[in-house]
Image (cartoon, rainbow, N blue to C red; front, side, top):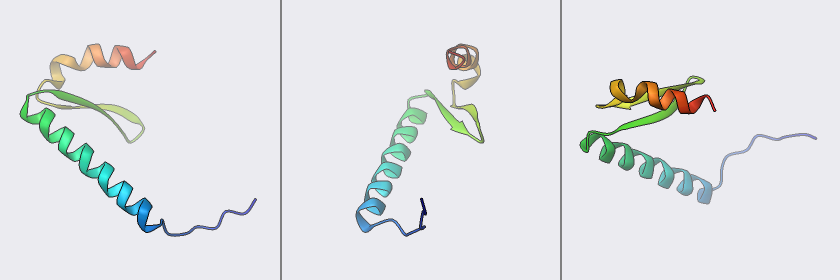
Length: 65
């Protein structure tokens, strides 16, 4: 099978931008509330946010399942 790289359609671009905005707004809201978030970055789990130091052991324990 030959895969030909192509540009995403306008609809796909609009969907991607909508998802990026939703994630950005959610992470900002969690930060304002003093909550942490677990994200996947560079092949590893990463905790971000004010409470991440206290939540790290619990969140990382669940990631090993």
